[in-house]
Length: 502
Image (cartoon, rainbow, N blue to C red; front, side, top):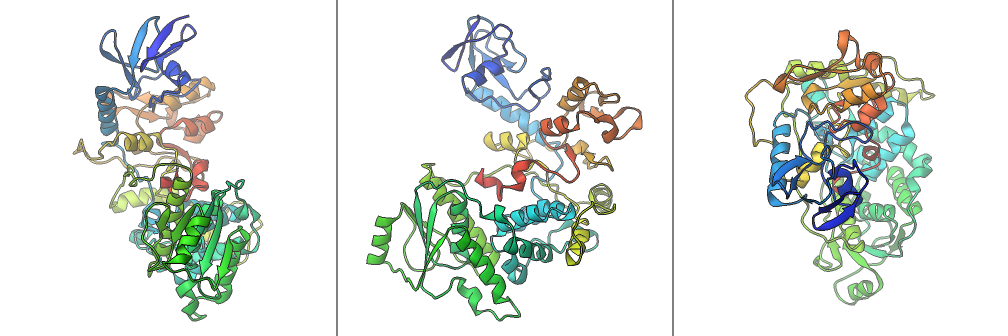
């Protein structure tokens, strides 16, 4: 049995074990993009390199077999520098949006394209889950939000913007009336948080914290929650909509204590003694610090909700003993302004122009499904689980380190259930190997050499024809969503309000 020392940790492994698997047995993380369990090592991305201390060389850990007495470093400075350079070379050619422009500009970070796909498919329960966990008050915001998400919508530059606000308002009624999944919370953590202020900011923070399993008490000086929204006329915001959504917060398990004004003297001291953390969601009570967090109100209700959600996330990290530091700068790939021809290509392949999927939904919501079908889906189907995004963030890779002068290759191929975007492809070859493993009759092939290398389907068949047996595994293995299902995305994206929360 060969022995190997990795980062000064010794382990004995079975003959034929790769350095990558040996590291994983030691719970040492080595990044990979082109490796997939059950498929031969591809050796295409070279992100998994480690240093063999016997030779001083960098070797790919996925294909290097352990030899007795081998000593390896996985996190030395030059190893990390090499990985960063690999990532920067890859992303210099990468063409795609990590986040759709609409999601990127939503102050509450709701995953709008997911909502569109769910509405189109007739999954109103799923859409209700998405809009409520994203906006907390989708009905209220459906009336009062100025819809900053609609302005950058690419559909607007093409013909007419998507009616995003109208759609989440229509779906919100489903959420208010019947959707028990929305009220499910994890087991009680035993931690209790006080929130001072029962406006949308404080209630949004409460929603996030209850979804983490914490007990929450909101102290509100007025007789009802809602803050400034209570002052709006009924034609601006029907009060029954606001009241119903506040009732949802109550049903989630949040305790409201009305007519309870908290000031900065003994009242606050008593709360600090009683609760594990405090979120101040109103003005002039206390400065943040220690176990006191601030959730700033804002004149834009949707921004107030976003601030509340963020405060809830940070308070949860504090309660979970996660060091609260400045938010990291997550890697963002952006296509930017698109030419008319590029948008036409996106519309041709992403817009759902066929008959609506079979569903029992009709009446007014049928119009919502038709509207949702217009979405261009310019988001990434792996916004959460994209390997390139994760490692580019972890290694601080720069998007424009290596500038290319060639015309960008923005294409979407496929009119069936499977789409392929060459501009996102990193040429790892996993899809080719997986199709081969499944014994596909047609499969995929790598055509060309060097920078001209491309994944193609032989004999001008479609990707649906080529991946009859292996489509699901190819989509799961693809590190960048270059291969994706038309109206689906990674599961985490459907149940995660922001990438930051992961």
